[in-house]
Image (cartoon, rainbow, N blue to C red):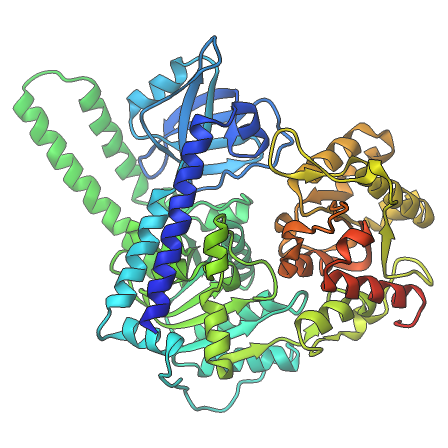
Length: 623
């Protein structure tokens, strides 16, 4: 039991050391253009205004003005560092670290340490910003694991023993609640959540209504508890569940910075609620007066210091009153797992913690939030995307084995599988159903036989020719791979399918399309080709082009997957991670088209089975 957690600690250290070395290598050796193409850097920047936000943090706006189509890795909460490029193209790093407050497309707002840092960036020529090593998150994870390992008694020790050892589960006993608007598996899952004293897992395969079920479980829990904590690994997942809870009329207080900034989400954020509070105007006036006293030192220093001290004391008192008011009114506190360590939540405890997308979270990050809870409800699908881990040695050692997986294996009695899916037609659903879900899934009648065209083939695999031009190659500016000939074939295939459907019908019915490739290099190439070709101009608003990870949680009427790999050695690279392919093929509602070299990919038994399945569908052996 303890040995497993110690092993996690050791593997996490390997991942940290790998990231540290990678950052050092990037800083010293990787050219700035390559960093930009890898999504790690924005350069050059247009520097915008600086101002104090509602939390009295000094922030600076920046905007990227080149390579705006490149998919970047900047997210709220991540640390960044600024640099300046001189005439000889040498980079000079500024000696401070900022933190991303907000990012949207090509604009970013960064929390700055002080006014000197702002002036330094504003006065710089050819300035850029890049991601910095996230020491803070690692420190939180190491601290959380240390506390769990050393816990001798109390709820943290009990949960550890339940999750990792043979300690028994405990349940409440009362009659099941009825939810006629849910299907039987969803209703059973909500009841299992309500009965659980320690832990429950809602296993939600693609399209089975995991979010609907989780929202219902939270709503019902709030009939019994005054407040719950809702977390997820990513800001996007937290925003999504928060939005759904708000739609149900639940008062949500969103800690941290949402990535999808809608008016509705902004209204839920701590920052917006803080500045909308009746006492905020008075607090803002005091803060402004304090800054003016610092900026204009005049008169008796002793009197001035006393005045500042009194005003700071009053500001602290007002801030405390506003915080207590906001937290007392909220029924749900939502944040990322790392965000649960926010100073605003220090000392706060919750009867129930809900973790959405738990299968994408490292075990250590889950323990950051679990320390604040008496019981834990997890939702996710360990058959889809795993946590993002960069160190191969850490992956091989099992760092990607999540706490949700551990609980599923150790305490299967607490797992509720959602079995009715509402996304895919049956012909698309049956292959992942057999491969990943033991054949337990069924298609709802509303989607079972739906298709775009009469007698359409729901899933097909277009084999790329055995020719030199279709051999994969490595992108010049990154470690990613691309296959230009396959990219052209991918778009030609989609174009032919569009012609079959008819332009007017596509636009009238707003049939949406997802172009997916596991490789960022291919994604960039596909985006460029679609942008250049005037044929796609009327349809661009209906087409999304992204990596598999970028499509997690999404769905489209038509999905086209460019698999890229084509080589004489039969190497499929990280396409061996079948969870990633499960995500890709389960995004499609009515049509799934695979483009790829079968001789290469079918060297792997999974793709061999997939190829045989597509043949059966095409021959109407599966309808």
